[in-house]
Image (cartoon, rainbow, N blue to C red; front, side):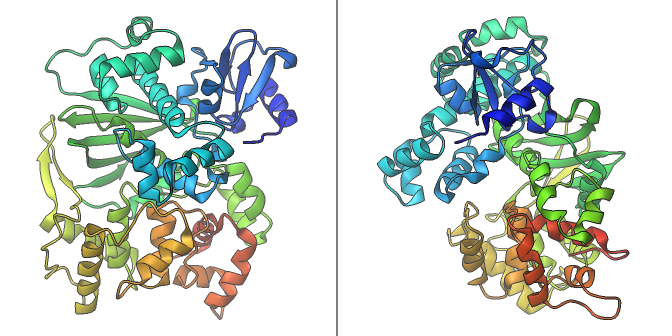
Length: 488
């Protein structure tokens, strides 16, 4: 991927945090690659080369800096500029704990393995395997340095199926063994038999408007599943037989979120948990690029000035968000949350954490396969739509890895009872598609209209055309501009 050398030079010399994760600086004389914010003495320009991603730098033979730790860098916005096929491949690779062969990955994408390798070489400059290994090894380094998990647990949590392979890949990247890194770190060994309590830090490029995210998630929090209180987001979860509770707090002075995880059943889902939280809080957003486009509209510019660091609250699970969007059609946020709470209470699985507190898990499509949804306060047509969506999810007609907004909307609106508003809203939050735009939303039409008349969906689409490819962020700003009421 091409990058602007002049911009990279200025950013690294200024240690500008806005460019953290956007590129990496490789130093030819030391063989090390760093983040733009590395506190070490800046090398001479003739001794450096720039890479758009950590995978590219590692593939070129450079090893990660142990001081600025590329393993903690925010995700690169450059990933969003590659072809839709490569985006979908990356999404599939990151959505499963264990590795997939290139042949299997290509089969799921409906292309040949040769063509997939060519796409990765053309757009990313590295192979699918190199991307997978680099990202997982970087994540493992973070666990080695920051958690007390045993090395074997870290290997499996990072997606490696054998310690031998983990040790080989890790040593190739860092030129030291996991045991050497652990001895040099600060994490103490975990007491045998002690309940797993792990902390993860999630770095981001500033600014980030944490109160805005919590306000949005707070009014939609499901009793027993989620809670927003005293600046902390909490929810129950189950990943890869890994059940527990997570709590997320903001550390603005360090430009990161701090996640505390208490679990039952091991730590195999940590990599997936990390990926889901980054999407939930939109931590890899390119705020500067988004603001540059949206601030051209006077209405959105005023909102951006009042709340810099806008993020698009995503979803912990796309199926959960999709089901809640269907429940919320044509009713208020409060009413939709109440009905979703009844669904959780009736069909969700409960468990007790190590502190003796009871929690509930949002039901899966399999758990809802035989649900009749009676008594939830729904119309017959809405109940039928829910059943149809659950069935379509289970039999594969609904594909949550779709990279194309148009393809997603075509797929989901083919189901009875689901219109464009629902499809766009699920794409916006459940799939984190930045250009999704529910043009018929009442709040959007009110925000774009006059004091006496709402705008039309056609007019809303025409105005939002200038906000591409960030229309979803524009929709969020419009909802925030309303003096009263909550968007659905």
